[in-house]
Length: 82
Image (cartoon, rainbow, N blue to C red; front, side, top):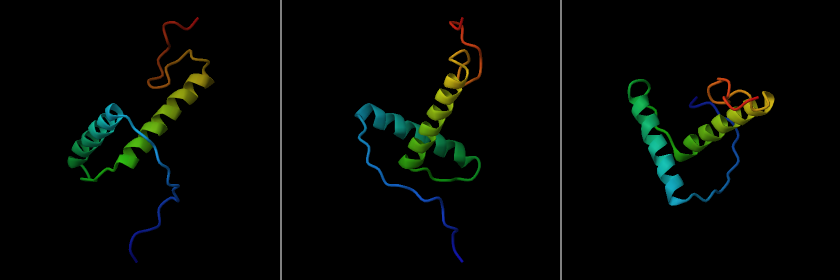
């Protein structure tokens, strides 16, 4: 009974600049506003940072696989690619 166990996580400590803290806070507020129309889920700073790392990884992986000829975020050809 109760909740199923989630993925095993490792605790790490990161230091954020005040500007980065504002970015995380703004993203968290945005995600919570979007969730109000659906699930009403509450987001934590850790979840926001995990999502940002996942997006960054996806973009860089696409850049490396296409030799920087296509944008990793949108998939469009880059103008400076020769």
